[in-house]
Amino acid sequence: MKRPSLLEELAGGDRRSIGRVPSVVRRARRNPALASELVRGLRHDDPLVRMRAADALEKASRDRPAILAPFKAVLLTVAAESAEQEVRWHAAQMLPRLPLTRKDTERAVSILRGYLADRSSIVNVCALQALADLASRDRSLVPMAVVAMEAACRTGTPAMQARGKKLLSIFKNG
Image (cartoon, rainbow, N blue to C red; front, side, top):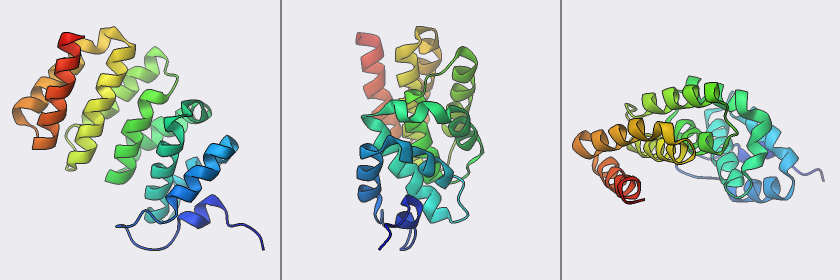
């Protein structure tokens, strides 16, 4: 019997379930060439597949960020265009893992700053963390990131305030 494609494994069930994401992540880690299928899944017709493809790609790229490099343009576009909170929070986690040029970095920062106004607290927190991660790589971004962290501490959700305080302590003491 033929093994199902990664996207077939991600289909079915409901939004409250991660489905077979752990199995897909294991397959993608063993064979990084499968990342292209997950990237295609970010634009799948089924929102459940899009959500789970983003989750699986983010998890597979944690210890292998290089698997994202060939898809930089697509990931930046998906991050900018997606309205789905699950895709957005995973995109925020992946953007700092990309090999970004100066222009790419400006685009990523713009996307992430937009995410700070998202309805989802998870998207907000992931965006704040991503801005901090980018600022750690590019010190010219530190002032902007610190302003975002301070704003989160003043007016954000409890989760944003906690993350903002944690990140500020790192940037001010580190």
